[in-house]
Length: 127
Figure 1: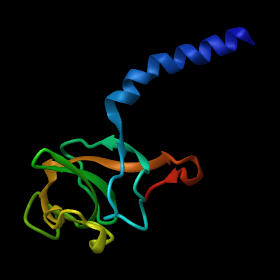
Figure 2 (figure 1 turned 120 degrees about the horizontal axis):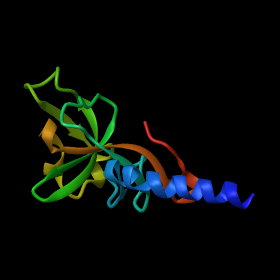
Figure 3 (figure 1 turned 45 degrees about the vertical axis):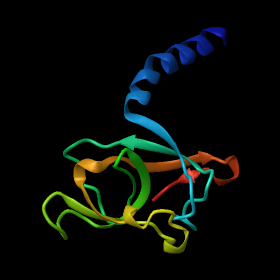
């Protein structure tokens, strides 16, 4: 039993750098993504690869002017100018910054939200 626990712990430690090189947490602030995401939700975000194409419907983390925003892709690269996507919040009334919605270059997208892990009562995959 102790050997099994040791092996599991060793595997977790060996794989953790790989996990943290590809994933990062984001805490939702503001109400622009209600009802899908609430203020205080903590999300597991997978870093995007430069060649990855964001798809309409995905929730992504985008960076603009040194700030990061949680937004949903409403139009993909094939529907706009080459390399551009259109991002919007789901609750315009809750948006603190109106300029956060709109066109983004694909390179501004730093990650795709895959799951919510906080609060425990709302743990689930995010689509």
